[in-house]
Image 1 (cartoon, rainbow, N blue to C red):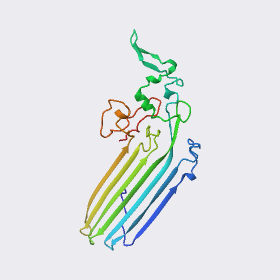
Image 2 (cartoon, helix red, strand yellow):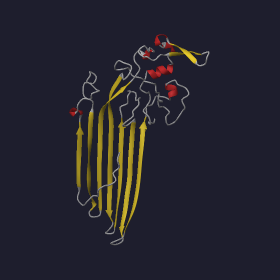
Image 3 (cartoon, rainbow, N blue to C red):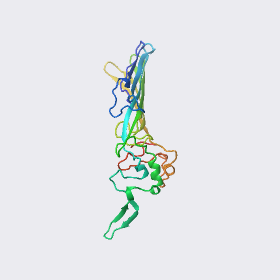
Image 4 (tube, rainbow, N blue to C red):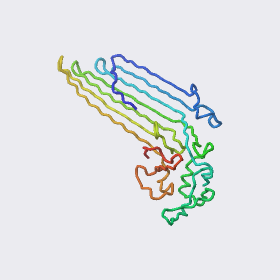
Length: 294
């Protein structure tokens, strides 16, 4: 959100105006990476509404005035996210589609000349009984692929939401010909909910809003002006500004040591039920985008 630094003063006459701006996907071309399907027959959503108005006038004629404005934005945009997820065979422990060889850690042994060696799993396949229970829980968090292949095999279309509200209100008062004062308060709020690569909220985002974010900005400005004569004036000003940014990450129904059956994760009050980030080479990450909280 943006805090206005300059505002108008009200006058002895009441004035106001209002506006509305609308954009809709009905006038857009189709995204090249989101072709029509049975599940997604229409165009990706692109809806933007901006609306607001201003009003100003007298409180006490020739002495006190007010001025206020408001603007709101409601935006919904269809985003296409492409990721790499485990194939149907890989989910069963079969890596025949991959050129990467899978070795059995249980066969690790020392070599005579130094170093270690392991035996490759037969047919490059990990037996179901050997898949770690924690790995199985994490594997089940990945969605099934939407296309063939071992890379970029999952495509998701979701609607990214952004809501903005901001307003200013200003009061002016003239105590006489030599003294006048004003005060202005402004507040802006911006809520963004981006489309994550995976449906559960996991995935790495590198641009735009990187997680569900709530931003609030507010400021107060005031001034008291006294005129001593034709050449000397004194002005006293006071200002206050505050801005907060809260980002929300992916949470579990219990601490990860319980939900994932993964012991040894340190307890932290701020991230008690947050899903840790798991980065598996070649796959989309599990866990929230960076810089998100609980």
